[in-house]
Length: 248
Ligand code: ATP
Image (cartoon, rainbow, N blue to C red; front, side):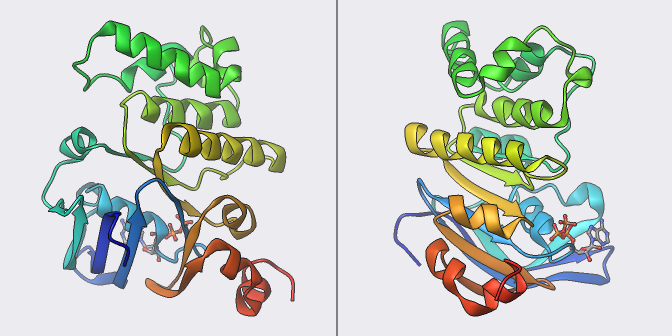
């Protein structure tokens, strides 16, 4: 464990519907200013881990039954998702979830609703989002429901940025996107990480792309971390190559 770890997940267990044990003791440590990847196949428990951190399990009848989650040394398990946003942690859910009837720009502005630092600051951040996502500036008057999957993913990330977070939990940003768009999205994540100093924890099935952009990775299998290490080391690991990168 590093001393600067912003987010510490320690040995958590998650049970759905009182009986289905899905996370069987997951620990991870997310350093400030890094991109940390949570890898693993379908159903490994990546989404569940992110939802446990941001306290979004209740609506799915899921519960953290063991272990602890700390953010900046503070226990966050009993905090509402809204309080976590105030602490600087925001989750971008899998599948984007735009407000389809609002325009792209209105969607982005909904991300700023918890802020109290005035319209000037919000306008400046809207400009910041458009700088990272020029495509969204072009589409700002379009109804979000009519934009492409890639644009909706951009809106979802842009909206999260509008809350001025310190940490973004990003669930499966590559889902359903063409390879070129996936690369574009990860390039933007990298730029935001480097220039704004934002911390990312991202869940990704696309090990290949995730390990090219992340600094550190955790591999989950059936609710357990089976391997972790610096991204470079994981990329070169023979087991990772064989089972996750599709080469040997
Ligand atoms: P995916 O890429 O499909 O999102 P994942 O690694 O994120 O995969 P999870 O969505 O966390 O995996 O799911 C882990 C396991 O928990 C799966 O076996 C899934 O069927 C189960 N699960 C998820 N949500 C629920 C729920 N609400 N009730 C019961 N079981 C669930």
